[in-house]
Length: 122
Image 1 (cartoon, one colour):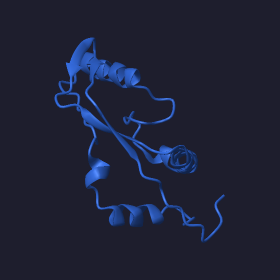
Image 2: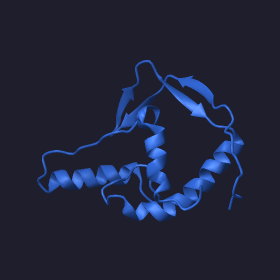
Image 3: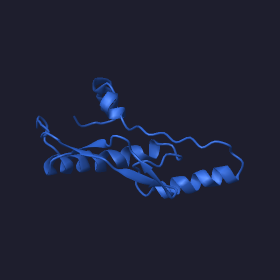
Image 4: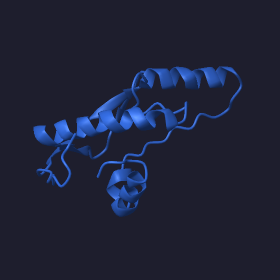
């Protein structure tokens, strides 16, 4: 546990531009213009993982059972399998969305005030 009053100052994140693609259901999808990838320092990544382990245990059970992204013991292949089940059972639509730029655009003061309502530590 971190001591009260300990101030953490993140180090500068290294930004790397990657021009990649990905495979989706066997199809190769190219990303036009690539994307930026932020690489945190080892110390910052260690702290991020420690915070994740504490918060994930408290919050994961409050998420929708239909949510698969970045959740323990849930894989993209499971999400695709579930979507295929829904289609086979008669549903006409599967909705998939990505919060790719969410943390770039969210008001961090509001976000942190909401987090503070559920986190006892500061």
